[in-house]
Length: 208
Image 1 (cartoon, rainbow, N blue to C red):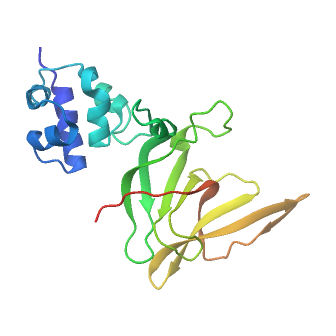
Image 2 (cartoon, rainbow, N blue to C red):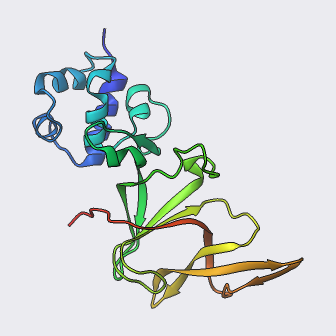
Image 3 (cartoon, rainbow, N blue to C red):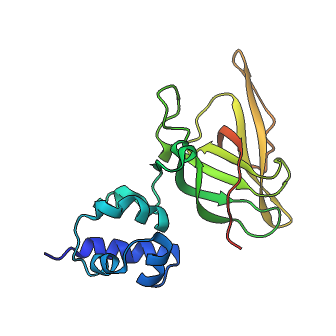
């Protein structure tokens, strides 16, 4: 039986990861080339045997890869028995905000704040992630922010865009309540991104 959907998702994953050939994927993943060629031809319909290592190598969601549901880069909690620290991390899309130059997105491992019965957060898809590798206006280097996508009223620390010398830069402002009175340090020309829910000192490996 042929399984073209799996073959198509493998091809898409390899393109997203910049892996141009099956031999290169085999070297990176440690998976036998013959198995990968069969997968690429649609001869294997259930890749569960190597699903974890394959999707980790390709940087895509295991759920999407095996079923087609969701998006290739959906937030996915990743647990590896050989690396205990990774039990509390997940792969997701992160916007990198360098001190100079253009903003860009990467798929990176970040703290999994959502895999806890004590956490009050909503689903991971309700948040965006921003990473500052070097010191910028409002943040020290290696700062990772978890920010709500939906702008809801209430007090807190907020993230906003400001255009500086033709480039978008991130700044923070606070919103506080005293009874019915609202006090905010937001400037009129700032574009609100969302409320900051978590700030970490975190190291992400970035492409050269």
